[in-house]
Image 1 (cartoon, rainbow, N blue to C red):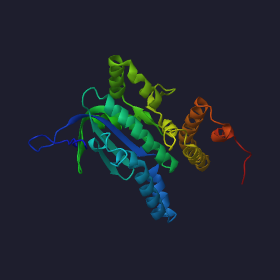
Image 2 (image 1 turned 90 degrees about the vertical axis):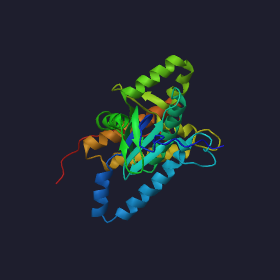
Image 3 (image 1 turned 60 degrees about the horizontal axis):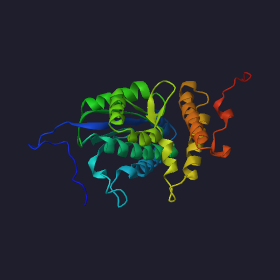
Image 4 (image 1 turned 90 degrees about the horizontal axis):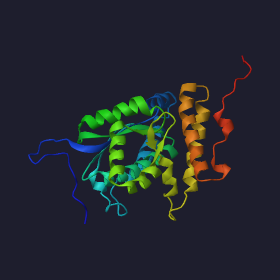
Length: 274
């Protein structure tokens, strides 16, 4: 039987906020890419690519025969071009909701990156109201601040509200550690971020390694490294993804053919040219 859909509406029909897991994310550099597409007269191509990428990425959040038993009707998603907001009301201790969000958000981010749309975002816990016209609440503000100030690179970072909530969950049940340890990593700057490449280990019919997705991810990163080689502050963002990609490959001892060549991560000066 399908679960009742949770809405952000009170019994009197008026809007109400609910304590929720909130994600605010955007596509890195999309505005600049859209402007360039009009200059190059390729805007329709970009639009189709974005539409197809979102359709593929949102499969993990949309109701299908495969996922209809795992509460996919209980979250709300709002998209405006390259901005994505996801709200998931929390019941009980929120472990079920957080687990679902981490798993599905990982699939979404992986599919977007493999389509060459790199995602930056924040995950927070707080009050939220969301409908077709409005997104409102402290959780939205928290997630937006994290995306804007802390994410920096193409990664989805946890706010303090989400980190503190996870710590409370682990105090309740240390068994929760296993799932969080798979889907979260601790970065050099002290931020917790979504280990979305973990989805490669699951996104195959045999529940093994999807080497095709791993290769697509590698090629997408390498392409960005080449495109932005002359723009250091942008190139550094994709260098971060390349190092994350290689870390993941080393963690699971994948063959070197799946790693990004270290030479691509080094920028050297050359003799002047006129």
